[in-house]
Length: 137
Image (cartoon, rainbow, N blue to C red; front, top):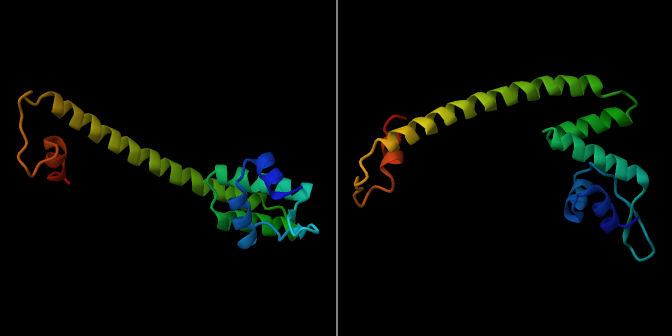
């Protein structure tokens, strides 16, 4: 199959497929007589694995490590499980940070409701609420 067919089957753009080839996540494809790239079903599965791993938040370095382990004949599942533990910690941290941000925004919103409707900003002020908040940081 040609690159546009691979892209259509996997939902990955041709540009991204070529990038993955350039960094070695996908092997260089065979070439047709017209020099067009030709891909096998094995590449479809490999690309779907990459997409799946990326959707779980793994970076390209992790994906490369998983693929290398697989092609060396070892199961990378232990490495994946360890990576999941790290990803869970990162997600928990992001959730905590987002909750703090939510509280701050909710507080600022409540403060804004208490402002007199005729409150004016001078020429240096874009929004009193945001300007006032930076003093607390």
